[in-house]
Length: 485
Image (cartoon, helix red, strand yellow):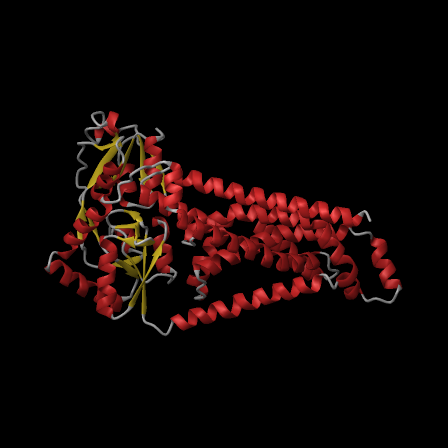
């Protein structure tokens, strides 16, 4: 019991820090007028990551428009980088105030959100490999072809209208490029300026001469349904920008800025060294998420295990239901419910980091609960009977005799759970947590290298899990020696 007290004190301190300090920090920010824009920063020249003065920044023509809107409102601008198909859920759940991400105001989208006046008209093109440039010279020539598109985009709708087309819908532009270069798709439907940026940085890609009928599409800014006040501010700023034709200039400036990013070398070692700060920051977030997930999962899992072993029927039922639901549903679904569903239904808005930690904690707790239950049941029943015969209560026996032995016997399994969480924490990049996977995606966008940033991330994940596995093995052998004395 004495050995466990520091652990519980540490865990409780972390819980207090999580549920008090972080909300207080958020409250401090509430004193400032803030407008939050959501965008998918892999869409150059509209929005993309760029290393400026040694720091990662999200730039582009849409970002410039957002800055003007915030300035006209006297507000501080916050930018959230979110996958394109998660932008509308983020807006409707109140996590962002508006979307500026080259979004086309389709009728389907208008049913869920309100749109501003259009601020730019773009054209759609077909991008393919250089050797296939003359093969796909019309939309009809794409019949039956495998076509890559960004999930939830207007291009996805265009590709669906091509007879016999086999669609591959992915989250990011870099994934479309990788699919194209690896031969998984034959062509891709893409915004004209976006495709031009990719072709300028990939010698093996080209834009075909195919013309997509009626493909000129408007771009507009999305706000939550009924938010007329914000929409009025946005339309006012857009009117001023359009009078001076400034949006077009923003696009030209962003195109020039993006063109200057052509890589000197896409060598994997060069990329790692040039963007090491991205990976270091990602490692910090990944370790923080994993440690917090296992720590809180440890506490919750222990309580759930005790409920499961309780003589009280309702507690057993709660524990079984909790464990089965969390083990029987994908972690991504749990993450989206916590981050978007709770905010939309109960108006409780966790930050992306809080949502990530909560998801990893409760998911991990379901598995740890079963580990604890097996550990407690593995302790000889005679020890409970001996302790009770000495006058110890049931609770005291559990705290002083049973649980310490159970925890020690399952520590290797807890360590393995830590390793699993390190790998599975990559899923939180889906909501914008800047973990290792998120940083690797940012490097892909900056360098136009679809594969090497992922290989670097994979190597770092392997090193972290391998080192942790060896440390746990050493710890386990040390405890085994003490048991034999």
